[in-house]
Amino acid sequence: MTIYGVAILAACYLIGQWIGAELGAILGIDANVGGVGFSMLLLMLVNSYMHRRKLLAPMTEGGILFWSNLYIPVIVAMSSVQNVSAALSGGAVAIVAGILVTIIPMVLLPFVVRLMNRKSP
Image 1 (tube, rainbow, N blue to C red):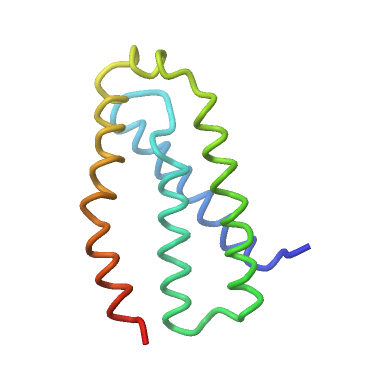
Image 2 (tube, rainbow, N blue to C red):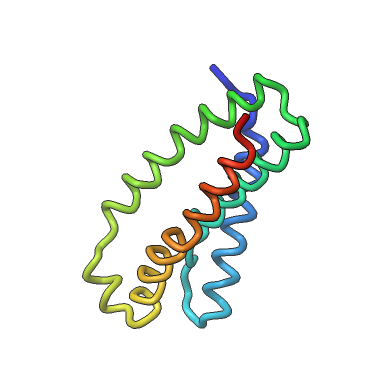
């Protein structure tokens, strides 16, 4: 079983959950707001940073990819069972969060594509 990269994944998850809990507290709601999303974003940033600096051994990089590929379907499955009507009745925070997580990636995608094309051989 591939266990390389689990510490990086776990650290990103814990930090993301903490950010989500703090964001929920700042917004005045008793919930984690986007903790898993922050975790995935942090994992991508850390992975990219370490890859650029050649700090990742091939086995570790493969382990991170392995666990990331398992992590994303689990999150999608968890999200699919949430009660959408309860989220909408929760008020504007749910609606604003949904709009933001849709618009922000659409805005950032061209920048990410340019960044990736610039680094391609």
